[in-house]
Image (tube, rainbow over all chains, first blue to last red; front, side, top):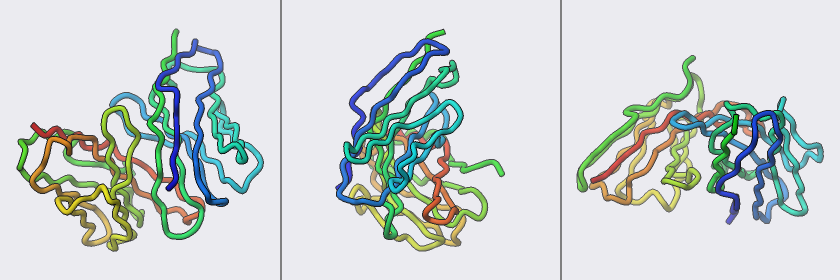
Length: 116
Length: 115
């Protein structure tokens, strides 16, 4: 079974600084997708960024980028120029790339606080 | 389009009672998912619909749980004879993209407390 591990329960960053959130996963599949979701306090979860395993190029979305290391099964999220609105729980998630299995497998999440 | 909606947002019930939650996906989204999130954990998959067909159920979905999507639009999740261990946030998500580009859009969740 696939597993997703987020070993850092909490992180803090100074506003305007850069922070990196770590995620590792375990799978025997070669084709899969990885995601980072953001869940603000009392608000719904939104997709931050996605990465297809077959793509060597790391995904970027404005201030958000990933460092995808397929051999190491590592998928970290870098947030540049941190803003107060970035404070939230961040979840790393995995999805198989083939077959009809569309479910997401999530890590435990990391709580990010942003210091003004 | 206002996104995925869920009702109620909060539910307090006594152990042994039945509860039902509703999820309205984004219009025209043919896939609908239910997840459960307990405190300090990430969401865990419960079940998945493609239109009205329930295609997959997790082992977490005991026989006290039942989900339906009768007309391929809204979905309901019923828990019979609730237990304190059922206390959690129940999340619904929907999607319609081609499978390879699928993004699941989440609702605000229903927080259940079983006393």
